Every structure is written in structure tokens, then in C-alpha cells.
Length: 79
Image (cartoon, rainbow, N blue to C red; front, side):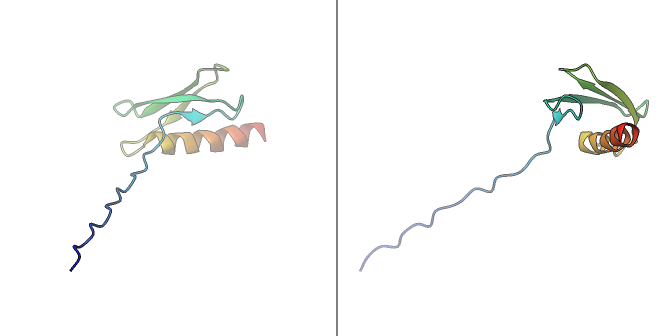
């Protein structure tokens, strides 16, 4: 009789939300987002081309949501 083989255990890779985003103006991954939930405002800043924006935020807003709102406003303005 042979012995049983152990099955390999595969770990699941958990995907995380990004903390730095792509700038629509210069194309580099340099946009950082600061959210001030008490003031209900989020600030976006590009480290390369110095693009800055101020977006309204609520208590549920995450950086990904703020970035999406910023892209909508950016392309609405420059399209």
C-alpha cells in the first residue's frame, strides 16, 4: 500500500484598491488623493505635471470613487 499524497494548498491573492492613479494630462501614474471626510472635500494632486483638483466627497467615498468623479469632470471640461 502506498501512502496518500498531500494536496497543494493554493493561497488566494487578494486584490487591493490602488493608492496612486494615472494622470489624464501627462499619462504618468502620479496622482495622489487626500480625503478630508470631516470637511467633505477631497484633494487630487499630480506629482509630475502639478495638476490639482478639489472634489466634493461624502463619508462613504474612497479614493477610487473620487478618481472616477475627477475623470468625469476632467473629460467633460476638456472634451
